[in-house]
Each structure stands twice: as structure tokens, then as C-alpha cells.
Amino acid sequence: MSEILKHVKEAEEKGVAVGHFNISNIEMMWGIFNVARKYEVPVVIGVSEGERDFIGVEQCVALIRSLREKYDYPVFLNADHTYSFERVKEVIDAGFDSAIIDGAQLSFEENVEVTRKCVEYAREAGGHTVIEAEIGYIGKSSQLFDELPEGAAVTEEMITTPEEARKFVEETGVDMLAPAVGTVHGMMRKGFNPKLHIDAIRRIREAAGVPLVLHGGSGSSDGDVRDAVEAGIGMIHVSTEIRVAFRKAIEKAFEEDGEVVAPYKYMKGAVEEVGRVVEEKLKVFNNTL
Image (cartoon, rainbow, N blue to C red; front, side, top):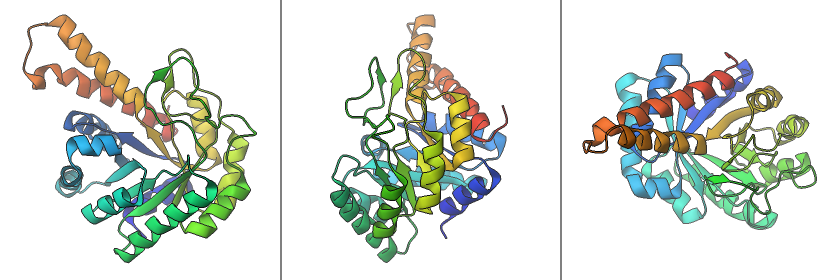
């Protein structure tokens, strides 16, 4: 069993969840990693297609591997939201710990086909990369919005069913599954995102037989998240809240000193603000608030 999957399953056994946080640069990485080490919990660093194109695919691997080796720490790298077999193959070959094939907007049959292909390649490549898949559309953008994304599966009639989850896992052999259970990617400008379908999470976990991942963790209430973990969520993704905190911190730095030009000076507050968000989330995910 891969190390990342082992830690997710151990979290499930303890009634907690592993935190997954996205980065676009090294400053975000330090903000996340420093807090994870403080609380001595495993952590997954995610990079979407756009984020890893910006940083560099091999450079992402080198950054996270250097942390793991230097600090002997369970920090892992995930290729978040990947939309084709070719790009999943790319990250498997590069040495990512896990990869998500996002076929949520495909038909069920097409999603099964591309996911199975990714799983088979990962196994042939040695099995060092865990494959996660999504069923049920919850939007794509990490942004603030006034209305829910069109077509997002947030109502009881639209969310993933236990039967769909069971069939999907059986037909693909996928290692982890991200079902649609009420979250959306991004955040509402005002108030919390829709409430999660906790009973559905419990039934999906039992039917699927593999760890469940909650995408769109930004904006959900702490109570909903705790209930979701108790119901069977093993990993939770957070991105938008980190991005908002990062941007606001940089804006504040320039407001306080409009002449500052050294990035390590105006980025310092951004690292701290990312860490603040991560700390709040990790406390909730680990039931320590």
C-alpha cells in the first residue's frame, strides 16, 4: 500500500481527515508545511493543471520530495484536477504520489473508461501513484461567486448515489473517490456554501469500499465538515480560502508600504495568512477545536 493511502486510512480509523491544500508557489508551500509540522499531522500538497504548469511538473516533485527527505515528514504531492489520461500519465512518470482524473463532466461510461485507463497505467508503472476519481459535478473554478455554479450537484436529487459509487469503483479499481455530496468548488461571497448531505456520505463510503475525498472544502461550515469526517470522509481539499488569504495579505502589504519591492518582504505576511487558514482547517479536520 502506498504511503499516502496508508495515512488516509489511518486517519479514517482515528475519526479524522487528512488535509489537502493547493499551492501556486513556494510561499504557499511553506505556509502549509510549517503548520502541518506544528501539529504533527500528515499533509497533502495539491497542484492543479494550471498550478503545476506555472511551477513546473518536475519542480513540484523536487520541492515536496526535498521536504519529505530533509524533515523525514509525511508530506505528499497530488496532481489535482487532471482532465486527460495524457496528463495523468505525465505526473505518474514524474513521480507524483497521487493524481486525480476529473471526469465529472463526462458521461458515467466515459468517466469509467478514462479512469480505468489511468488506474491500469499507474499499476503498470509500479503502483507508486494513487489514483483518485470524481463522480458528480461540483463546478470547476476556485473563485468567489454570488450564485452557485450552474449544474453543480448540490440537491439530494443530483448528488452521487451509493449505487453509482459502488459500480464506479468496481469497474475502475480506483483507489479513492470524490463524490458529489453538496460541496462546490469556490466560495460564496456571503455566508456558507450549501449544507452537506451527511447521510449520503455515510452510505456512499459503505458502498464504495474505498476512502472518500471531499472536494470544495472552502466555505463549508466547521460543523458540516466535522460531521462529514465522522460519516466517512478521509481527506478534505481546500484551495479558495488559501488563495483569498494570500491575496489579501499582499494587498495589505502594499497598502502599508507602497514602495516595497523585495518579494520576501511583502510575501512574509502572505505565508503567515496561508498558515492561519491551514491551522484553522487542520484543527477542524482533527477534531481539536
